[in-house]
Length: 308
Length: 292
Image (cartoon, rainbow over all chains, first blue to last red; front, side):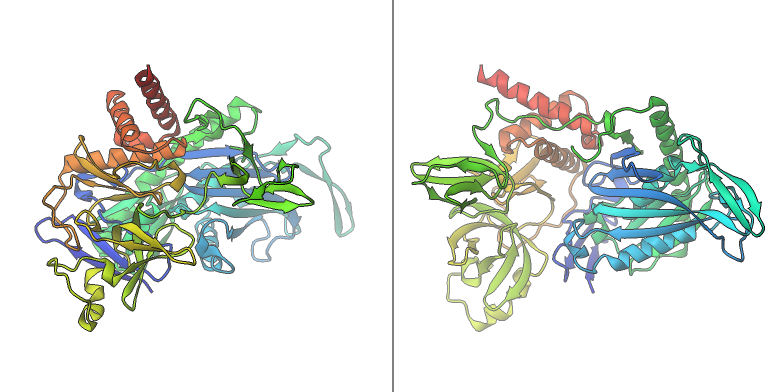
């Protein structure tokens, strides 16, 4: 495993020089992490700044909803497909969401072969955990026939390029894709004994949308020295030994927390990181919703897609 | 704090660096010529008496030799190049460095200056103490001394200006964007020094002084805030030039730096796509003004 050798200069308490003995060849190293006390990172951002995000929805024409999000060098493509299925026996009045993450081998050399499977499973599990709370998405809307038929949303996430901070990019892309997902309206035609016949509307534009106001956004906070930063670059991720990922819903509530990295966190820093995470998450949520509304109002403009 | 743009709002980065278009651009599988009698060089292959290109790049013709120079490829070393490499392995009497080439470059124990400047034959104790000088993960600036038969580069640090790099910022760009110049070490007027490795690694650090120890001594003092701002701005300028596929050398970096100061951009603003295109356009305008 990686051996982190970190020296904290006593006089200049916040200057950290980290030197890594890496086993995985692609791990980067930072000669100067920057005195985070002055709130200045290597690329001029403050501790709580995100890198520029580029968003586009509706790229995949044969999915019910899709989105592509580019967070600096991290590129994520999400497609949502809706299908009818029977609901879970313990939740007969609710539909459900199924997540699947695929780390493409093109994203980074580390994902070659089955290298990306662990990360994919982790992200998948965290997504499932964060959507379990009733506050996030109203699954009762997805019910068609109580106890017999419901909508299942299959959310497929494809990681095309890995440039640090994958959790955040994935969560924002999933939220955008769910925002644009169109679920066909369905009517119960006849009740043929026990077998109900469901009739799908003829009009392709007769669809309903989900209320994604409270769908959670993830905020990754990594701890370097005595401070924590939001949206780490791959270099900063390598320099940090511990961090947390917080799932924050639109109402500033935290729906899930996960600790990443092998280092330890002091309880006080954990509490302050959670607080910062929920504030940053609320801001990100608001800005994303505004942008999605703007795109919707702009109407059917030419899709840019991948040809840039 | 957070900047989200729609893809349709983002400008394109296709700024042509030189005003003249390259004469013959090819893509893999495109036909170069049907005439026989040409010798085929790198980046081409022969099929049914026709010459095709195997990489995306510019066709170069020297008398009877036709080759294709790719636009983006691994670093191809020449003797005398300055490179920056990261140590990946400490082996017997040599260090292996990653320099963005096809093979790891080799830094032999006899090609480095021993601390203290002694000139003697390297003994077994020197070999055992190798890890004290350079270990895995260290960044080194060196010069290409020789090229082995298999294409691996042999490096040396036999001058005080080469050696282990201490505090600064590394930017990785494509090797084809680094212009070959007389010197690759520059002390910029803004309070930072820059080392442009021919292999595409650009190292930005606080101003190196003439009487610096060099070699293997690392300077770990706190870097002043003003210097770090200059380094951050330079880093973003280099990344912006690389994204717009402009040649990177000291003049173009300084033009970009001055343009960003004059336009009043904050350091983190230079990460935004429209600021990047603005900077690139200002640099190009500056060059055109200078030509007249």
